[in-house]
Length: 327
Ligand code: SAM
Image (cartoon, rainbow, N blue to C red; front, side, top):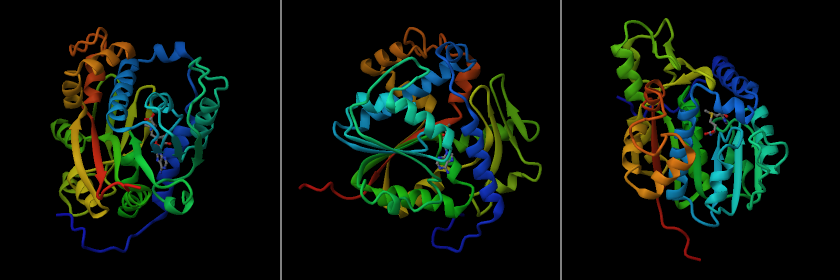
């Protein structure tokens, strides 16, 4: 069993840095697509569904005027969502310098490949850095505290070592105000482990994704007392091709509690869709985004293989303990 009181001396070896670089290089090398290329993607409906999930989280938890910290913000694909929420300030950080450059271009409204020349109504600061290594509380002294922190499809990159996982949570906790909200999406370890057990060998997948565990991997790792560094290779057509790490959610939750967070909810993305598609405003948003065709839950335009990828992920909301400052 994971023991949070246990050894707090972490071994940081060279391979951890090499893998973080591999992740950064992979995302940095991803070029911006034109609108036409994007629409032709084999996972276009999955991308739209993921955008819908992030939009719902943002609409539920961001308030007008909020200061927002977007960890692993990528190319700034969520800038428009934050703008719609009328936030007051935005800080975006990503390890991939190429992505931060694209994010800056998008924020400045220059040559946006999505053909929008949007000017955003909030000031923003965009930084390139490793969110799971650097003491962000020291870097963002003048920007904190934040009302909302968002880490979308990226928290699992912190799970290569306990030190990095702790740095991630310590950073977020230090930068959020009491009562502040942490929203995120990441792979659902329960689903991945279940699929691994059902699979014949070390790999499984479908026409749009595959997951492959290392040769030295064995069932024992899932059960071992060290829940960090359980690595696999993830390939998602037209999106991801790099090492990732299993995040057992019960460990994530227990560790988040050490950093003063309480769980508001965690839901697999299938459950998330089922639940929020009961709300007319979000059905309408889905219709506008076009992920599920006419807005029914029948996956009319999302292919079954894309829908299976949605099942690999979960969405979570944590709240930092304490009361917001009344002043
Ligand atoms: N959050 C964005 C979104 O939802 O569109 C991007 C998601 S993308 C799947 C994962 C992102 O995590 C990439 O942009 C990658 O560069 C970033 N990332 C991975 N490891 C990171 C780290 N240690 N520090 C900061 N960003 C990291």
